[in-house]
Image 1 (tube, rainbow, N blue to C red):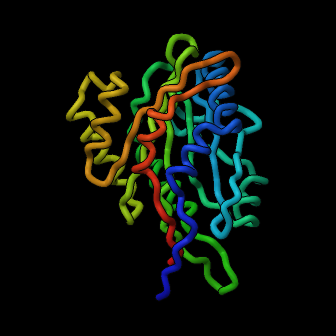
Image 2: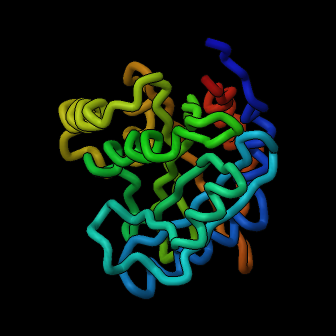
Amino acid sequence: MTIQKLAPVTHENLKHIFTSRNFLSGIKKATNIALKRNTESQFSVWRGVFSENIKYFFPNQTTYDMPSSTSFELEPKQHEQIDNQKLMPIIHYHCHPIPYVSPSEQDLIFHFDIRNQYNLVSRDGPLPQPIENYHLDCIGAIRESGKFHNLLVLQSRLRTADSMEGEFAYQQIMDRLGRRIDDNTLLAKTLDSLSNWNAHLLTYEKKGNSYNISEGQLSGLEKFAYTPVLN
């Protein structure tokens, strides 16, 4: 079997995304929705499997009617774009209407569900080909009425996308932290210390109508860089 490496998702790529106008606009929209409606909100970032084109998907309506911590949805036309443009997920983001980024068990299970759902791409042959793609998940949290925005970036580097690993990771976090899961910095360090997991906490500060982040904060994204593989 021939394994084809695709264009890497580099540290520079990630820094560019996390400081882009679209991403910062997504944070602003998500924060406003969370503050106004006290609900989760989301958006996602995709890249071409065979190109480096970036595509943002913002929902036309909020996900207030969805169960807590499962705030990801795509519209039918977005599913069509994924198939037709051969896109793979790079970043999924959802915002908590509280100051804490602590993931629920369902959040961590969902991390693998997304990989399983979008790990195939159709080519010229009769069968779709699987992709090893270690996308990032982000959980945002609102501090001081939106003045600051904490962002937990997480990623599993397990080759097998097993949702039971999400359950295990959640239990490990609870066993180690207990009631201290409301400490965003400690939570990120704890998740990052687990085998096969990367985690990093970013803090954006609101400046006028947008959010800013320091270069030093972005340096922590280097460990999330990876190269997708087409099997």
